[in-house]
Image 1: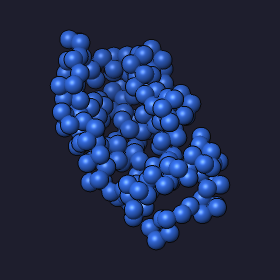
Image 2: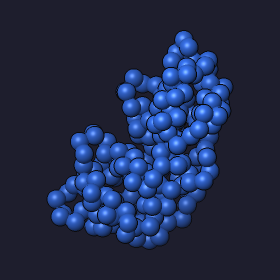
Image 3: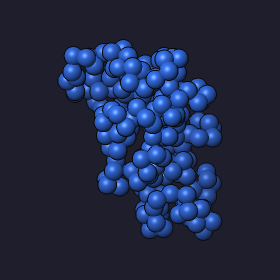
Length: 190
């Protein structure tokens, strides 16, 4: 998309209409805004982290932003292209609960092996706690990332094998309303 970043082709527009929950006009508006913020047609990792720093000035969002960047950057080329951006935005804002659960699972599954380990979960939860800084007061039983992850594993890792599968993640999310509310954060906003 680099050299021809100024305009979406008819084929790109058709493809994005079919693969997202946005209509033609919405895609074009998002593309215009994306190019305004990223004139090259690419969002770099550094720029992505800077955006998160603006949203979370009282915390340390770098680690979380870097993990999230990796979920956006599907082709692992070091940039978020518009197609990658709009796909994630579509899923997180208008996707089905199932699509959102799969997306959230991918965020926690850092090595993409189809399982979430305790350490992977701890890495993400710790990065969220660092990002939030002092903005949120947590309950005593979730005051540290370790306590939160321990509670999540107790809830989700039904066979106690040290791994959370996508099926266990789905089932556990039905029981823990905080997971559903976290992945439904963007509902209706876009």
